[in-house]
Image (cartoon, rainbow, N blue to C red):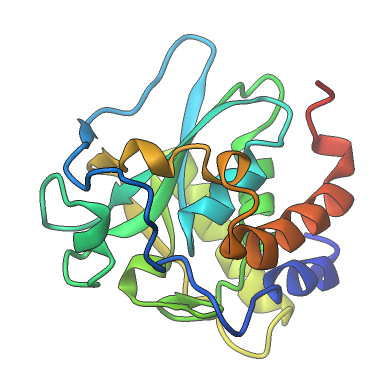
Length: 221
């Protein structure tokens, strides 16, 4: 539980004129969705489900970590089945934008992923990150087993006790129930749309800070 200044530095990156929910003329249909109701678990891989604001930002950062096999962007925690991005952006579905992170626990632990999670956004902001506002941008951990729940609750308690922020951590810690994968154009978004304004002014600065802070945890290829 060290380097709380790094937490604050990473969480402070935002912009005054753009947001995740901006309209994109990509020609993709909001109906091209797939649903996943089970978490991917094998003998060697495990899964974490995090929401920390815009899933484009979360995806771009966690993709860089050694031991992370894949990151999928989508929606969880709501009441509407197969909700589209357009519907989730209204803030009425109850869903949060999340990333499902499939990782190798022999290379990176859930505890390490939690550390990265809390150091890359501001968990004291209720239902927002920067200019992205609404319940869909809430800070949330959807745990898939009791061990994940215990670690998340322990970490949250220690963060609040540390005084790292002058406001309490409001991160939701809830059981995972379902995950609806977002439309194809949301997947690997930053790598495929790096020249768009949101990518240049919001995601890129976060990624650059991320690389400096977590340089010892990055993939080498």
